[in-house]
Length: 192
Ligand code: AMP
Image (cartoon, rainbow, N blue to C red; front, top):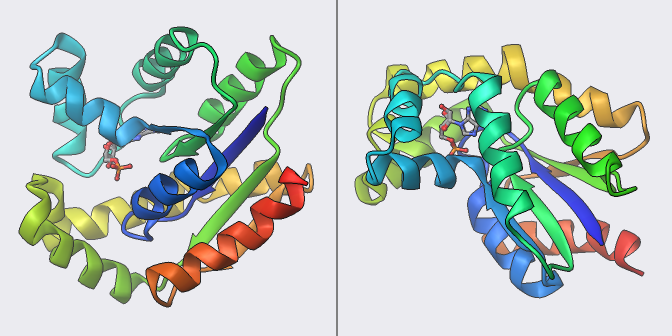
């Protein structure tokens, strides 16, 4: 079973690429952002709590995020692997994921980090905001806050898996197909 993290700042193309990779490699795509948005749309207690943080460009607290992820994973069976998109976003989340996988004698196989410069990210997210309907995609101050949170709290997760020799940088500039090819090249190495 493949355990793969698609990493990178907001707007780096994780969602688009994760959907394509999930299809090609038959992986179950878990996006914590999508899970939160679905909870919010259904106006659940968890969703309304998460919205307080999401609308400010802040991370939802680890306790809530980890609980939701565990709940999602434990209700799945018969999948051939996972692609994590937008999770883990803090070191405690990475440690919780490692512990969870360890319970079934598994571990993260690979983390690929999409590298995109900040100004390009802001441009992409504002453009996505025209159609995504996401309030956090329409306000440049909130977008810049999300990037800052990524730099301050999330980017260190790369090091957590780099220490285990699992992390790689991927150039996130180019067409969707070009970036997809770069990701596939790396995934093919572990899927052999
Ligand atoms: P995304 O769709 O991945 O850009 O996530 C949208 C928002 O959901 C983020 O800005 C956070 O507020 C929240 N979120 C998503 N994933 C996580 C996570 N792993 N930890 C904390 N907050 C998260």
